Amino acid sequence: MNPFVKRSTILLIFLFFLAASGISQISLGVRGGIYSTRIKDLNEGEYDVEFNGIPKMGYHVGIIGQVQIGPVLIQPELLYCDIRNDIEKGQDLTELEIKKIDLPVMLGYKLAALKIMAGPVASFVIDDTGDLPAYEGYDLVLAPATIGYQVGFGFDVSRLSLDFKYEGGLSQWFDSININGNVTEFDARPNQFLFSIGLFFNDR
Image (cartoon, rainbow, N blue to C red; front, side, top):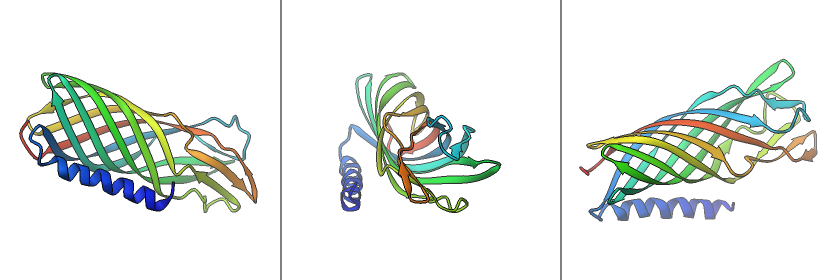
C-alpha cells in the first residue's frame, strides 16, 4: 500500500473517532493489552529459515468506539501493535518484530455485561525487522497490508471494558523471502490470542 494512502486512511479513521464523540449514542475510550502470537510456517521446511511455532508475547494500545442498538453493538478500534516471533536457522535463533496498525470492526450481541463478538480486521505494517540482521543474505518481505478476522467475548461494566479475542489471518503475512538475491514465495499465517482492558470516557 502506498504510504500516503496508508497515512490518509489512518487519519480519516482517527477523525471519525473524534467526530463520533459528539454523538450521544457512541461511547469512546482508550484501551491496551497483550498479544500471544504464534506464526505458523506453511513452507514445509523448504527454506533454511522457519518459524519455530512457539508463541511470544507482544502488546497493543489505542482507542475504541462502541455504539449499541438494542442488544446489538458495533465496536471499531484503532490500535498500535507490537508483535514478535522467533525464527530458526539450524541451531540459531533470532526474533522478528512487527509494528503495525490494526483496524478491527467487531459486530456483537450484548446480554447485560456480557458481549459476544466477531468481525474483520485490517492490518498495516509500519515497521519490521524482516531483513533478519542475524542471518546474512536473508530478507523476509512482509505484505504491507493484510486482512484477518477476530472472534471472542468480553465484559462491559460501567466504564470498564474487558475483551478476550482470537485473531486469524485470511491473507498471507509475507510477500516473499529473498535469500542471497533469490526471491521466492514465503507463506506463514498468524494465530493470535488477545487480552484487552479499556476505559470509556463516558457512562453507557
